[in-house]
Length: 109
Length: 111
Image 1 (cartoon, chains in turn purple, yellow):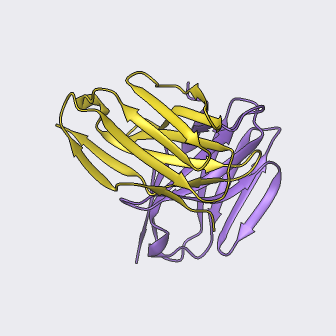
Image 2: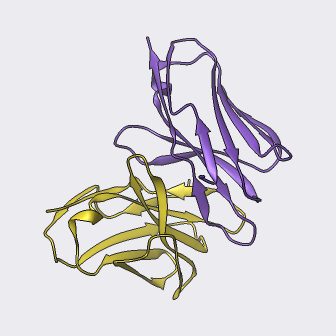
């Protein structure tokens, strides 16, 4: 079993829809990261969080430490949000990350 | 903004060649990492370094070595490239308990 599981693996939605991507992990962590990767592009860090909730523009990330679960929400989705979204967790004592396999999001105009 | 620069976006090398992938960061970060990304497998850690001349093996170090002679530069070396090392290679840096910054990646093809 992978230490970091994301769902769904693929998601297609209409422009304007509310999007939720989920991440569950099985190890103790110091922080959870949400990353975005556009086709052929590098990876951009969206959020790093260890508790509660963070918001940046139309993106919201939440984490429940007790349930070992995080969600990434996108409000009023737009075609430019189409990308692979990756959840990663950092372990106590070092800064190495363990990654989920990503969620491929496609927003149709 | 922190920048992590990888020397090449695309690289084609022959089997058996020695390959150097260079990564430079400009924000004095202690930690630097090399990952490879393959479809269905996600990102996997090859090596990381938490200080100059310090290195630790990641999950898949076989066939690779690294060098960190200066804080800002972390090099990945494929001693004798093989076709199963065809992949996307991503460098990243971070400060202790801080966020990550990734480079734009090097897509390496070994023929």
